[in-house]
Image (cartoon, rainbow, N blue to C red; front, side):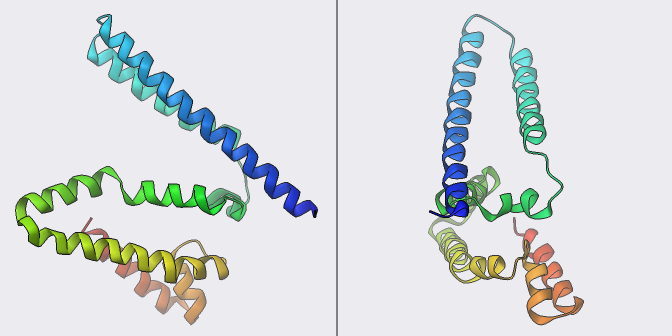
Length: 171
């Protein structure tokens, strides 16, 4: 087995341990918050505790994984397995804003709102199948960067930026 394969396997094992640790820690934190609420700790105090724990967790992750390499920072050196990448992408896709927006759209439009959901989901699948592999192949991190690299020059990159900004208004 090559050293790269051994290194990748080791990284994947570490990633699983981190995932289990953070997931377990989250459930322990929820139980602790629930118990504190049951004993009468004010909601305002619980809110501050939740905020401080979140900031502390993000700061801890940032300190433990600091790097100066751009590829390490944006895409973890491209070593993250597909399953974990899929979970992260799915979590991003199913964000609270999307969830609330979908519920609001269905409430306002009824069954007609399903057309938006189908188009949204279909677009997600198309991006995952037809665009994401090329971002990796070209070594780019964003769609505008990919367009600039693929078609050469800043004109395509600028069009990509404008399209991304326009699309973000629907979100």
